[in-house]
Image (cartoon, rainbow, N blue to C red):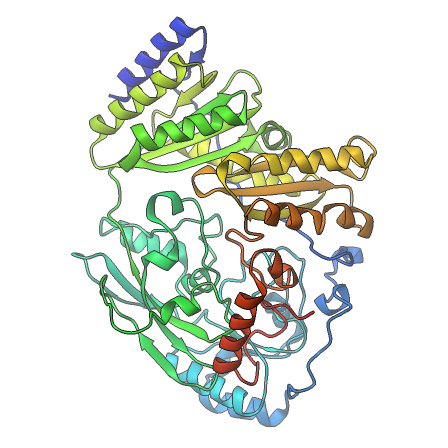
Length: 542
């Protein structure tokens, strides 16, 4: 059926003068690109010399260690040794660096102790002791966050979930999976694959990130269009509160209308209210048929037209609708092996990657074929290809997945993760580029070399990357707070899926009202009166 589909598209291409689905076999090797992104949200965020990451406290001069927090003593360490195995305690300075520095080498804390509990009861004892003695704590999963939320700022104790990695139960009728918070996302997905299911979220960092960290940051990713956010797919949580209380809400029920839905407080709270130790999540059935198409279009209006039509004509089988611009594909071609996988003959202003997934290949192929023929016939699409096998699917996705890494190779990249109504999505890129041009700061030999836009059209989520020669106060001042003001002015959010952490906490007022922020502070004060959980982050501190 896939071959017939491609033949039909060739016919449409001849009728319209366009070229679609030319390539039947792509045999170039693909190196999977690792998602990487770099950002800065303060004038002092410069790379330290000789590759040494500067302390976060030095990058944010306004921050001061809260003297309410006790400093770690030998007596404290002795207590932790009484409840944990020697291998579950890290104190060596070289080993601590892994936990003190985030994976982007942007943020660096000064923790002197890492604890790795292997049970919820041990987490409870640790937090109770820390709360009683006012020892600040940073919960840490796979340390793949993008806003500095998972590493210390000063000398907070790191509580790593790496030893809590057991799959507790799985219901192969309902698809309800219950597991420890330290389970790696990709491990869970492979476990479910063997049983005909899949995890409802997919991230570039899936080989390292923990499900507990995903929940705590309300991670989005590539499957959100199809399966929704974690606010909908998480059925229940097990959370240890700062005073050591174990909140057991690991329900596997899809319907439970009794009392407040407390789990929602902890989804996206970034470990500031308690520590997630267990997750119950609804896994959907794994699709049996997957198609991927890559399209080239001239305008963002055509991107929107293709998306609007995809909702009507692909509806229940549409699983991803991604876009990127000409600047993005140029960087991929210049810096990554994945750039050699671009099967389109010429550069386009915009690219659209569409994925469908369903249970009946003939049915899905026919729907996709009709949809693409319509786009070509109405001249919404100028060029495109449809992947014919798994390798080609991976090759096309490698282009999209490679964009963040390609951006990181372009220099110092200011990265922004914002959401807004789809009609103004790309206007953010155009307005930012125009601002830099008007400031005589864009182009060869200028402060900035490129402005890149890509993201999830179906989620209204734009990844705006501004590449500069270096991180400087002058460069930052041209972007911030302008981009946050622009986002607020278009009824958007300054953080669509990456969270707040230390990077965006003081910009929260651009997305939330004063009354909402005050209520958040009240929740924090009620659940964590001593403020020991992940301090200096998430909520505004100035």
